[in-house]
Amino acid sequence: MRLRPDQLQQNLSKSLLPIYIVSGDESLLVQECCDAIRATCRKQGFSREVMHVETGFDWNEFLASANAMSLFAERQLIELRMPSGKPGDAGGKALTEYAQNISPDNILLIICNKLDGSTTRTKWYKNIEGAGASIQCWPIDNRQLPNWINQRLKQAGLNANQQAITMLADRVEGNLLAAAQEIEKLRLYVEGDTVDADTITAAVADNARYDIFGLVDRAVEGNANSSLKILHGLRAEGTEPTVLLWALCRELRTLYQCAEQLQQGNGLERILQNQGVWDKRKPLVKSALKRLSPKQLKTLINNANQIDQSIKGMVNKPSWDLLEQLVLGIAGKPINLPS
Image (cartoon, rainbow, N blue to C red):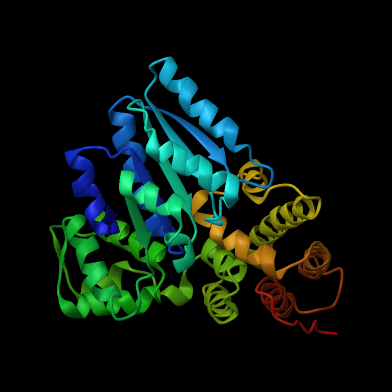
C-alpha cells in the first residue's frame, strides 16, 4: 500500500499495519509521520526498540531479535533507521524474509532518506510495501506551500484569508519547520480563530530576523545568503556578538567531534546519537559533514577564538566582519578574514 503523509493519520485511526517504510528528504514530514506511528503504537501498549543500519550491521541479529520478541509475547515497535535505503544483499534477504513471515506481536518502522527509483523496484521494497505501507515525503514547493500552510492552520483551529496565507508563505521562505513553528505561535497569539494580514504582521517575526538558532541552522545546511540575512537582522536588533559566537562555537565543536569520529570509521547514525543531535537536525548536520573536513572545522574553531579575542579587545579586528566570515565558512563558502 502507498500512503501520502496527509493520509497516514486516518489510516492509523482504523488499524495498525504490520510494516511502515517512511522515506524522503523533507525532515519535518518524515519526523511527523514517524511520530504519528510511534504515538499509535504507544497507545496500544507497544514497547520500542531502535536499530541503526550501519557498516557491519548484523541482519541475522535483526531477525533473531524480532523472533525472540514474539516468543515472549511482547508487543514491540522495531524502528529500523536505514538512512541510505540500501540494505545490501544480506539486508534485502532479511527484510524480504521478515515481510513474508510477519509476527503479530511486532510493528516494523523503517526510516530512510529519499529513495531513488531503482530502490523502490527492488524485491525487498516491494515485499515491504505489499505487507504494509510506504510513505514517501516529497518536498513542498513554493506553488504548493500556501495550500499546505492553509491545511496546517485549519488543523490548529485557525481560519486565514488568502492574503494572510500568502504573507506567511513569503515570510518562512519555504522552510516547513519554520512555518509549523509560526503557526503554533499564531495559535497561542490569536484571540478567536481568525487570522488576517494584520495578525501576521503583528505576531510573526520576519524570517530575516529569525533567531540565533535559525542563524546556526541556515549556516549548517549551507545556505549562505539566508544565514547572512539573519545575521544582519540580529545585528540591527542589537544582539550581542558574544551570544552569536557562543551558539556558533557550540555547533562547530559538535561538528568537529562528529567529523573526527567519522574519519575514524565510526557509523554516522551512532555518532549523531552519541552527540545528542535531534532527529529533526540530523539532515542539517549530515549536509555540513559532507562539506567540511575535520581540518576545515578545526580552522573555523581557531577563527572563532580570534573573534572572541576581538570582542574582548585583545586584537584590533572588527568582530561583526569576523562573524560574517565565520558564518560563510560554516556554510562552506570561501572566507576572507579582515586584516
